[in-house]
Length: 160
Image (cartoon, rainbow, N blue to C red; front, side, top):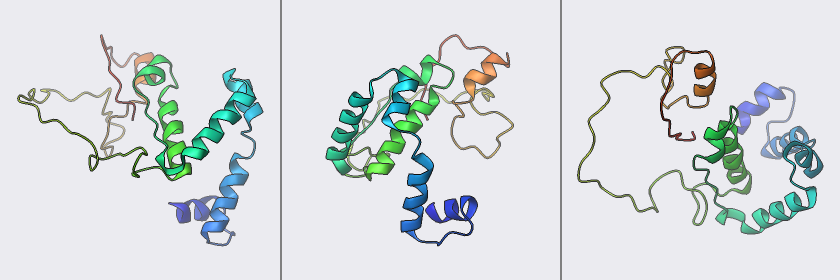
């Protein structure tokens, strides 16, 4: 949370939400549209136009990354985190029209038949080095495969 961030990164700073906002702005100040253009190849004016549209959407801004960038490259898992960070910055998490991490406003089908549970522990998804992880460590999977810890024929990412 924001208090923990201030304590860890700015221990002498005033413990106020306004200070937190100021420090976050300072931390991200270098990530300009021009910087993003160099990194992505997308022209800075287009980035500004999209940013303004996101700002206009406000709390009704929704993002979702299916399997595209997350499974298409080694650092793809970060795309989902960045998209969700936009929802955090716009205050559009769990809001009408925003990205909802739960089913309070979604249709959730009930299936007539569920497959049986797995019969073995998948150390590529749930590595022993992270015994307290309660979710798939999918962002580590490409690194584990590169280290030749195992192999997979097909993988459908859950993104995060």
